[in-house]
Length: 328
Image 1 (cartoon, rainbow, N blue to C red):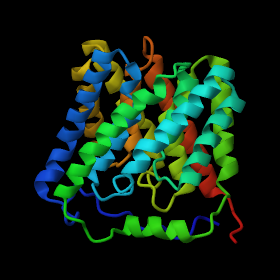
Image 2: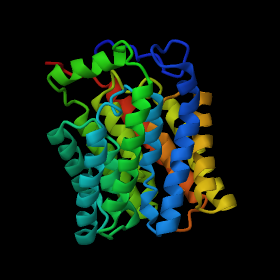
Image 3: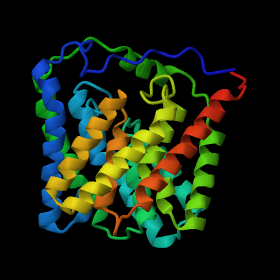
């Protein structure tokens, strides 16, 4: 039996259906995200701390500035704390374990446990925990580097939110509250774990670790754990194309402009254009476009790996949706 009837997603704040959000701020959300990423890229360049440009900052900034009263924007303390904690755990695991399905499961599992214990909605923290293992990051400066970006984003979001009148509770927000009070259903767990194991095995065997690129795990967790309210769970077939395009845009930006602020801004703008073209709200897809900025010598294999990895996730999700499940 399929998942119970879906809760219709709330209107996109950028659409005419959005309420309580001044039109000028809606129009400025994309330029504001682009400007923020440009500043972060400049800080990374000036300090030599590459991971100040933590790719998921693109996802976080876009969602927080586009939905100033959304789930992530209402948890700015957790936005700062959660990625920093998972980053520390990811660094420790990378310093002591080789890349394998076991280390991947430990990283993802520990990050999810931190999110659950803190009751944090910041799913991109999973990516902060897995990125060290994927790219071999062992520096203790990794977690503090992420803090620079999240603290700055929280400060910007605080002022941004004050400019936007509080809207009426959206259907998505109400659904989030209902989800918190509903006993968890764990039929998705074997499928999600199966996807992680298979993808990690293929990544290890081929040497293409970015088959399991960190934002993909964020997308998968949200799809499997919260299918009724996840904006992209309703259109999973489009995900591989959208993510492959944002990956291609990021790779092209780095190839043409280097890894400076202008390239980072171009990547984010292209990613936002792709998502708008597909009428999708998938913040982690913007993180995909920023991954080439922290990868050593990215090449054509990156967008190919992104497309293949996302296709595996989509297949796993559709398989779970098609399976008969006994409900409590």
